[in-house]
Image (cartoon, rainbow, N blue to C red; front, side, top):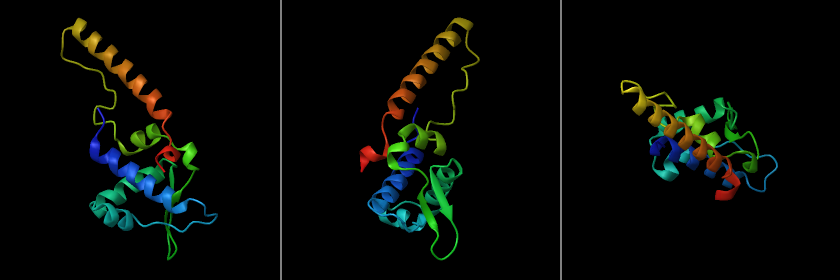
Length: 133
């Protein structure tokens, strides 16, 4: 299951940064507060999401007066799966197996979950940040 807030906030951050950086060779950093204010998001949560994206190498975070977040890769090299995976947008189960059911039920649920996650991954890997700009 996709967690709506984490996924949406991550995608909004990437969208806003990519949009502002389009056509520039030395883009300035964007503060989490700027993204939060523009889209009426909680600043702390936007900062958390953007930090998670930076830890995964999708964004780069620079300190200082000209610091902020920048894309660490070109938009055509960032896909929806990268974003969802980085921010925990795939929900708290994270692919954990179903337990506590009769073996036949567990096997069917686990197989269905694994198949659906593989299909979701394949679909999301073909949707790049560039396609939303």
